[in-house]
Structure formats: C-alpha cells, structure tokens
Length: 196
Image (cartoon, rainbow, N blue to C red; front, top):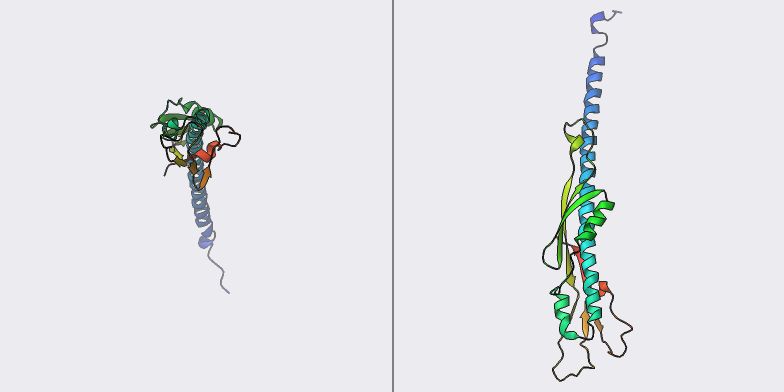
C-alpha cells in the first residue's frame, strides 16, 4: 500500500477558511441590510402614526364643532367639508413623533389632509457597510379625514323645532331638538385613514 505524498496534506483547510470567511461576510452584509430595513420601518411607523395623530386631532375638533352647532343645520355642510376655521394639529404629529424617537415635518394640505415626513433620531449603526453609522431613515405618510355623513337640507317651511336626518354610512340619526342625549361619536361622523 502506497503512502500519500506530504505535499497534498492540508489543501482543504485554506478552502474551508475561505468558504467560512465568505459566509461570515454574507451574514454581516445581511445584518447590515436588516438594520437598515428596521430603521426604515421605524421611520415609516413614526410617519404613519404622526399623520394619523394630526388627522385625529382635527377630526375631534370638527366633531366638537358639529356638536356645538347641532341645532344650526345651516352650518353642518361647512363642518363636514372642513370649510370652518380649524386649528393646526401638526403639534400632535410632533408630539407623537417624539415618542417614537423621530422628528417630523408636518403640513396641512387643506383642512382635511395632513402630510408628514419623519426622520429617525437613531441611525442604522455600525455595520460592515461604510457610512451607515450616521445614516438615518426618512419616510412620509399622509392621513385624510373624510365625512361619513350626509343629510338633506330642510325645507324652508320646516320650522325651528325640526332637524335633518343625518345618514352616516348606513346608520340614520334622527334628532329631537328637545332631547339631544344621544348623539354620534367623532368616529361616527368622520373617517380617518392613511392615504394610498
């Protein structure tokens, strides 16, 4: 039986080290991609939440205006279309973004839409990809407020003791001006959702 030559011994070890090194590099690269995706997801979450917060604040204000003016149906249409003076609710977007460790730029696009651009305060962090240690993620979102209700204006001879029937997505609300103990909630009057 012939013995192996000493020159062939250990040739698999450098190949093994190269393969393991390559796999380790790929694992670290995937980790960098994962960190970047997580940071981007944080920015998107902050943008979505901030836009919705501003829109919900405005929705609640409009619902309050409707409740204040429930006995004045001439004002209802302006309230449902947002054609009434409404305070800027971007302060709510800034407040919520801060709780999500982000900063935002918020704009009211008309009275019934808010657009927010959020940037994470945290960075992607140190990875094998150069430059990620200072890289922040920026994402945007828009939230809209839509009236869920409509009504038919009253005839001129209807009198002051009659209010229109308010139809809100399949539910009709009939009001007695002398007993307003049961009124729609803000979520019955307006829908708030992220824009596509």
